[in-house]
Image: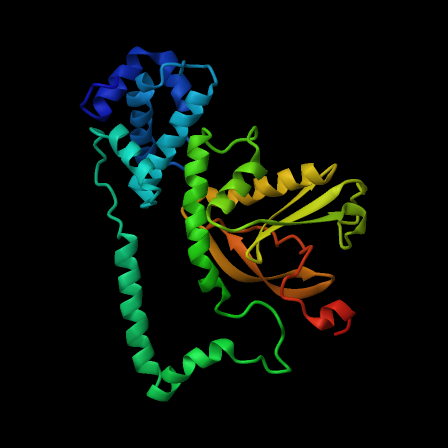
Length: 312
């Protein structure tokens, strides 16, 4: 199959002659994939099976996980415009050579989008602000807060942190591809820690015994164990529960890595609970809609004396 060409018709004919293979490969289709996306990714998988000699239909293996991960990376690049480290881009380009995608979407490059946003921002700034206002903007960044203003992350914090998490996103993508893809059997904390340290930063882990956390659902009887919160550069990344601190940290790391499975990650200021009060916090989010609120914060890097004193 690897050397064949002819697109969908050839693949359909090949699978028609191999019904067991057709049934097996169909199990890898994601529920959110359109027919067009799946047909293309299925061809990518079939074309490249010979390059992974240990991949056998019906048998799980690390080679199969790696092939499936690369197929998702290729599909994300073709259909969603995602970009990855150059070594990965070169690999999936080679593996996808010869696959014809009907009417593939056209994506602007990051440089094009940045230039366009820059032009819009510059024109908007000139239209809305006078010379004095433009000159005073740098001073606003370091100006002291008014006494009546709530403490918390400054409005510009998401934009300041975003470049780091863009780099971390690519580091995590490369690490997961090398590990054979995201799954339950990985050392999630080690992957997250090594990626963060490769970007010259460190993780912050906060542990709290479950029995000390207020506001748990009334019907919850489990009081043993610990909860871990993971942050990097004061940005919340994930929370996890476990029987001990190590297990809680592993679960929090797994939840943090889930955020990196989408097209991109975004730093935002969101409202959440901390010590019984609503506060603004920095959160790392994916593009998925949330049906539930955020878990309460275990730590708050933007301390307000009123929060510490418990006064309002």
